[in-house]
Length: 303
Image (tube, rainbow, N blue to C red):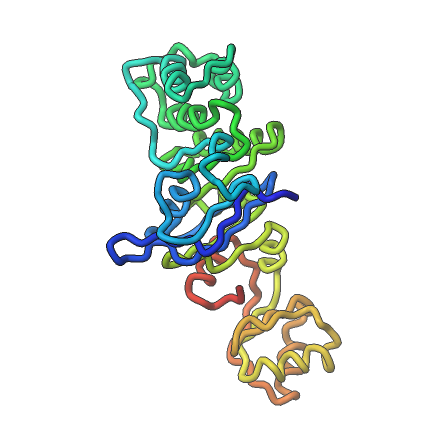
């Protein structure tokens, strides 16, 4: 797989305040990469540096394996701040206006984008009279002018109703599967993100603290027994010697996750107690993305 984005020590400071700190990120061709973090974590600032809307204080952005990122940005489309749509004009008129501004003069370009975003039948509607979902689809359509290979979308589902969210989700999956578009998106709707993302980056206080593939996240989130114990090293030894399994994970100094014996919790407790390990708490767990994110933000999950 080739890298679409790679950053080395990417940092942005505003008047002494560090908004993004030493970010080393990697996005591969074909990814739908979800950037997740609380408000103020630095997601939008990072996206702005990737798209050229903000200049890094230090560090480097490599796009399409080109260290001269400004040269490669013609292959990108982005939706970070909502475009200034003219609500008096139709959907088509707005697209044509932005196509001229971007220098997209290819014949049929506007019709191509209208079909791609599923708005051919609504092309003649005045944008001021359309739904928020339609406006958001049009905004993504503007980012798609020129057939970019890489798309950056900051909160593309923000403020939409369930139908609008579903439409945007289907559009993203279509772009990725049919057009092979690599996508970087941010969103607070974690359950929706989990339906489209193939890779995740988690930000906290300006730092990228964890990157995971969808497969790795599924592995970390599968059903298990989560035990809070007096000695994780000894508990791990009991898992291997007494319970005969290596299918466990030491999370931190007092927590261990056991993926076997989920239906035989009493057997696990007995083995631990007989081995001299106090079990302070044991719960059956199977984390959603939201639960994993909350644990990661509080430091109660291994990175």
